[in-house]
Length: 408
Image (cartoon, rainbow, N blue to C red):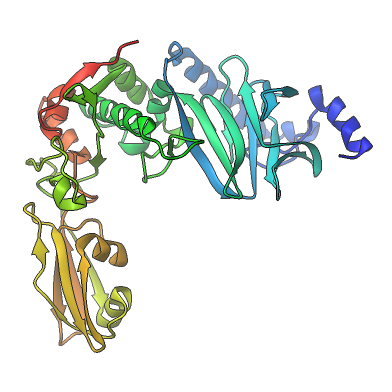
């Protein structure tokens, strides 16, 4: 680092002027005077005040959630003043509230950058807000603190967040916040159980789970709502257990009338993930239809030329496609139902395929959305509307389980 940049870094402690994390516009006196920005800050001020008022006591469990992966640069900031630390935990700078700074990847480590000037280099940087502030990561606000580092040569932002705080967002990210409280409570307990199960078996040294459908959707405070906060708080520290152990509480949107045995979907028998009757008839994806031209369909199946014959599907006991054979001009191919679903981007593996040779079209009629294992979210909504409480809902979808309280 040059002498000039070193001097800048020393003076930067209380004087950073950088891009606003939301708008990417320079923070200057004139820009803050814009009516839109004044309105935005008043709105965020009210939002942050409301969130602070409902913030519960510090939870005992902290999760590490991967937020931004495979990026060259990530902008971070805080709603309050925040301390920036290097990978060794040494405090470097104080970042003023609502101002951003970039962390960029280079060949060996990560760089802290402001206005094109590299302020510091380290294996990682931490941003820790003061006074229960919120952190800005890329394009969203989150509770907790953030670590930015590298994994496999790619930049990685990790939100370190209390479990209960994390759930405020997950429940609203995974389920409409207007749904009955018993459904939201079911989602809260299932999501808490799933997160703890994954944390205890994490195969990644830097994080426990990510923020996508590969685990659970987590979109930060924009998905929080008084209803999700109530659902989490009213079920605080409750998990679903089987034989005294927290379960992998898998869930999906809609099964199409009946959930699946885990063994029939993933070839792994799980005693509490058994096929049960679903009550998701009110789901908008309870039934659906997709149409393809024969040429489109053949291309998506791939490798056998123009398809001319579709065999009889082998079904799971729950009625989903386990496998199906296609014959084409250049050969035959047998695919698993989930591979067909992926190739054609279908909502589920509960489907029928019809080939119309005269019109050269393929019509697929199906039911449900998701893998069909564990709790059906639309089913949980229906049962909640019928007066079931969340424990009864969870016991239905996760067979032979008990909702238990975590020990402090």
